[in-house]
Length: 529
Image 1: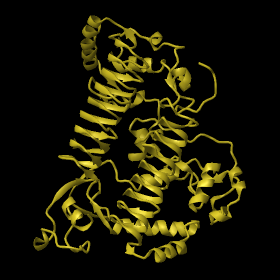
Image 2 (image 1 turned 135 degrees about the vertical axis):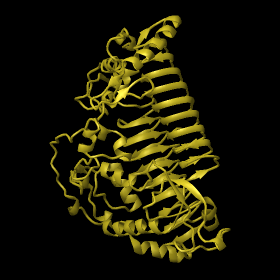
Image 3 (image 1 turned 60 degrees about the vertical axis):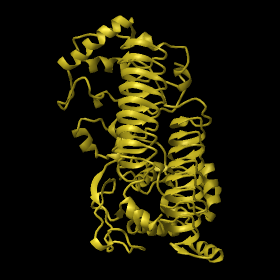
Image 4 (image 1 turned 90 degrees about the vertical axis):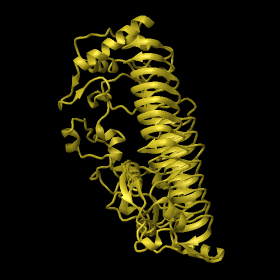
C-alpha cells in the first residue's frame, strides 16, 4: 500500500498481497472489498485459495507495543528483539525463541520465562546471569546445569536442589569453587567446546524424570503444569480436557491445537491470539473470536465461514456479508458441498469438511516452517509428500573471515569484528537452513565480553537447530521405569527394592533407544527431591 521496504516472512515469489503492519491495521483498506460469491461448481478449497491469494496479509505477525524489533516475528510488547521468534513482554532478546514474561538480555536461548543475562539456556524459569542451563528454575551465576532448582554458583552439575558452590556435582567451599571456575576459562572457544562435550556426556549418565509435569492430574506429555485431563500435549499450562496441544495455555475442551492462548472448544487451530470460543480449522487469528470456521487473520468476529482479514464482523462467508438467516441457511449447504465435491490434491489426498487446510494452500514451503524443525525432511522427502520446498536464495555477500580464523579467546577479539562477514562452519551443507555466513552486531559483542564468552562459529539458524537437538521431541513412547539398582547407583532404597526393577510404566518423550536413565516420578523423587 505505502510501497516502503520492509522485512517479511513471505518470500518475494509468494502469491499474496503483503502490507506493512502499519498499513495492515489502518482504516485505509477494507477486507470486505475482496468478497466472493460462493459457487457450488468448484471445490470449497479452490474458492478459499482464490480468496487467500487476494486479501492482503501483514508482513509479520506482531502485536502493538514493539520497539526496535523489525527483525523478529510473533512478538508483542517487546523492545530490541533481533532475529528472534515468539517473544512477549521482553527486552534485548537476540537469536532466541519462545521468550516471555519480562525476560531481558537473552542470547541464543529457547523457552525462557522471566530470565535475565542468559546465554544458551533451554527450558528455564527465573534464572539470572547463567549460561547453558537446561530444565532449571530459579538459578543464578551458574553454568552447564541440568534439572537444578534454586541453586547459585554451581558448575557442570545436575539434579541439584537448593545448592551453592557445587562443581561437577561435588560440594566445595566458596574459595575452592571460585578457584576451580577460574581455571576453566570459558572465554576460550577451545575450552568451551570441551565443556560442552563434557556436559553432553553428563546428560546421558544422570537421572531424568520421565516428564516435566507438575500440579496436574491425568496428564501426559512434557512441560505441563496446573492442568487436568491434558493428553499428548507439550509446553503448556492451565489446561483442562485438552488433547494434542502445543503451547496452548488456559485452554479447555479442545483438541489438535498449537500456539493458542485462552479459549475453549477449539479444534485444529494454530497461531491464535487469546480468547476464542468454538473456533475450528484456522490459523493466525487474533483475539476474541467466536464460532468461526476455516478462517485466517480474523479479529473480534463471530459466525464466520471461510474468511480472511475481517475485523468486528458477523455472518460472513468468503468475506461477503449475509443476514443471520442467510448465513445459517447457506453454511450447511456449503458443508454438504464440501463432502459431495471434496478437494483432491496432487497426491490424491481427499479433503472433505472436517479436514484442515490442504498444504497446497500454504504460502510457505515445508522447510520455511516449524514443521521442518520438529519433523525434519530432506528436499526429496518433502516433495514426494506434495509439500513445497524453498531452495537457498543466491546472496551477493563475500565472506571476509573464516570461522577457523576467529580469535580463540574473546579477550583477543577487536572491535573491527563488527565489520566482518563470518563464514558458518556448516557452509550450507547441513539440513538446518544454514545462511552460510553471519555478522556480529555491537550489543552481541558487548554481551560476549561481559559474560566472557567466545565468538560463535555457526550462523544463528544452525545454532538454533543445535538447541532444538537438546529438547525432547513432540512425541511419546510407552516405557517402564529404568530403576533396577544397576543402571544407576541409588542413594536410598525404594519400595520396589526387594522385587528388582520398578514396575511403574508411563508415557515419555524419551525414546527407548536413548541412553538417558529415565525414572518414574516416585523413584525420581526418592533420589532427587
